[in-house]
Length: 408
Picture (cartoon, rainbow, N blue to C red):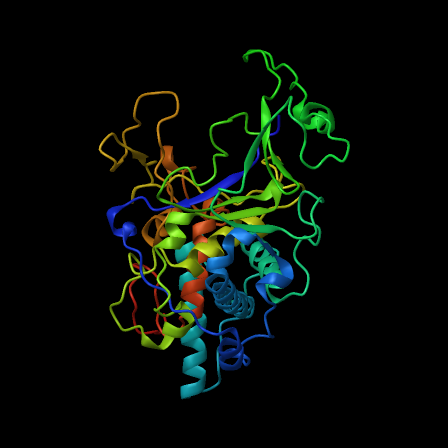
């Protein structure tokens, strides 16, 4: 059976348990204020199906989608700037100095989040690491600007639109010998979904396969996780959201959504109210726009049929400042000592600090643990780069703290 990439975004430290409120901003106001930045972004409901179980969060999700579209568009524009040579004006003026500083701000953010240093002569869009970053942001931006999603028929090629859900209560377990609720003839699931329910082929050295006991069903989506007790989405209370590319599905988890208060401002609103010394962590650790862009990086960063045999944007294991892999110890804290057991829990590269460490290259035994090959395929790095690009009145690189934008 093909293992499907399932990406979840969780809080993993005390600081990340702090949920900050979110101010709903009218979509019309957003478009009016930022029409000069981007072409009018499409509405969430144009490119995505939003499940009825999201009814109470509909406005929050729609406004976060609009804000995310502005941030992603700005991230792509920043990347386009450094594909051109760093400005070398014949004479320095306030305008040309600002252009140099802006190029350097973007270059530092790219190095900080993706681990490669942009070429001052103009960074080729076909260079390996730049190409990996552009693949995600270009597809994401195209979809968010609409009117069609990317890919247009999704990875499963089975649904008109990908689906956003809020929680998992709508999923129903159907045993293999029970009627398929979507089959007009009322056949058993094992008959109507034979390919899904047939016994997997034996693999040498592994346990003998058994027939799947059933599947979780919602609408026309069937998840065959062989686990009747739980659909295994949003398992932990700390999980913010889960992306399942093969099913064209993003689920925002109820504990996360219920922690978003409706009377505080979005990142777009707040742009001009950040101050020198403000930090990205924990200020934005649970912000819905960051989580949304993180999940979109998983979704739009895939290809093929959205399986783990295709292109995958991961949630990679975190590393220490020296590049050692970090695990979760028995006390819940990070440790460089691998715990005993077959599948010890990994610390994941969530948060600005962990994302930035993942971008740093190391040598020796730690050479493969981090660096641009990891960072350009890690969802969290895309979310933070979009934030750093949008809030461009400060330089956030290096330590995640707001600093004056200066030239190198």
